[in-house]
Length: 451
Ligand SMILES: NC(=O)c1ccc[n+]([C@@H]2O[C@H](COP(=O)([O-])OP(=O)(O)OC[C@H]3O[C@@H](n4cnc5c(N)ncnc54)[C@H](O)[C@@H]3O)[C@@H](O)[C@H]2O)c1
Image (cartoon, rainbow, N blue to C red; front, top):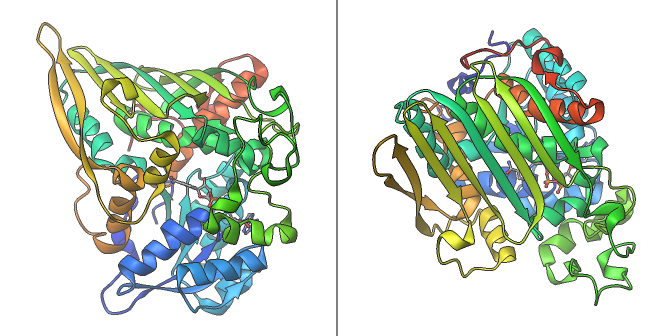
C-alpha cells in the first residue's frame, strides 16, 4: 500500500509486457482529447488502448471520440463505464472542481488514477482524496508536466549539486499575457467554484515546481489578491464575442469562428450544456483574482516571494534562487533578454502544440557564485508541449516506467496536495487577512525535506 506517497511507483502499473493497458478517460475537452487522447493513440497504441470515454456533454463526447481516433464505447455515466469496461487506468481531464469525484470513484472501483493538475480545488476535497487513497491499494498520479522540461530540470540539478550552498530564499514571478491570461477569464476558470481561482488552477503548476526545487514542504502562506482588470472592471460587455456589439472597440475580441477545432469542440455542443468558449471576459459573474501575490514559508525556513500577473504585454517568467554560496537566475520568454520575433498568440499555440515537430532552442540559466564571475549554463530545449515537458512525462508514465527517476520528477498524491494547498491557503489568507498554516488545512504535516 502506497498511501500518501510522494514518489509514484509507476512500475506498479505493469504496462506494456504481454497485454495492452486498458484506459478510460473522463472529460473530452481540449486537454483530454489532445494531450491525453490523440497523442496517446498516436504514440503508444502498441502498449495501451482506450476502452471507454466519458463526458457530461454527449455530443462533445462523440466529437472527442472521432478526434482522438478510437472506436471504444462512450458513456455519460462514469460508474457504468468503469463497470462495463473494467479499465486498469482512469484518466481525469474534467473541469477542476470535479476531479475529486472521479479520482475517488476510480480508486474505490479498483483502478489506478491519473488526474490532470490541479488535484482538486479546496481543502475538504483534498482531504477526501487523501482518505480515499489511504483506503485503496491503487495509485494516484498527478500530471505535473512542468517538472519534465529540460530547463526546469537543469535548475533542479544545480540545486541538487548544492551549486549555491544552502537555499534560503526564492523570488518567482509569472506573467500571463493578454492572450493566454485573458483566455482563463473567457470560460469556467473565471468562476471560483469551478477552478478554485488561478491561485489553484494555474499557480499549482508553479507551486509544484517550487516545492520540487526547494525540496521542502510549504508551512505557511500570506497573500494579497484582487480583481482590477477583467470581470466587472471592463469598459463594456456582451454575451460572447460572436454576437458582441463591441467587436470593433474591444482589444480582447476573439473570433472563434476562424478556428475549426474550437468550433467543432465547443461551439457545436454549447446548446447541450451552455458552455460558451468565447464568453465575455468582462462579465459580472467573474469572481477570481487577476493579480496575486504571496509570501510562503517552507518547513526548512526557505522563504518564497511569488506573484502571478494575468494581463502582461508578454508571456514569460523569472526566478531567482538565493543560497548561502550564490544565486541562480532563470527565466523564459522575457522578450528583452533575446531577440523574440514571434507574436504572443503564436507563442501560446507553440507552447500547447503536441505535434512533435521539435524546434530546439538554447536557453540560459545563470549560476553566480559569491565572489566569482557568473557562469552561463546553456540548456537545449524544445519549444513545443510545455518546453518538452509533456512528451517526457508521457514517456515516463507509459513507455519507460521502470527507468531511474534521478531528479525525482514523478509526482504523486502528496505533491499534488502540497501544490494546491499553497493556493488554497493564499485564498484563505486574502479572505481572512491573516497568514494560514498549511498544516491546518488537511491532516498532512509539512515535512522539512520532501519524502
Ligand atoms: N497540465 C497542463 O498543462 C494542462 C493544460 C490544459 C488543461 N489542463 C487541465 O486539464 C483539465 C481539462 O481542461 P481543458 O482545458 O481541457 O477544459 P475543457 O473545458 O476544454 O474540457 C473539460 C471537459 O470536461 C467536461 N466536464 C465538465 N464537468 C464534468 C463532469 N462533472 N463530469 C464529466 N465531464 C465533465 C466538459 O464537458 C469538457 O468536455 C483541467 O483540469 C485543466 O486544469 C492541464
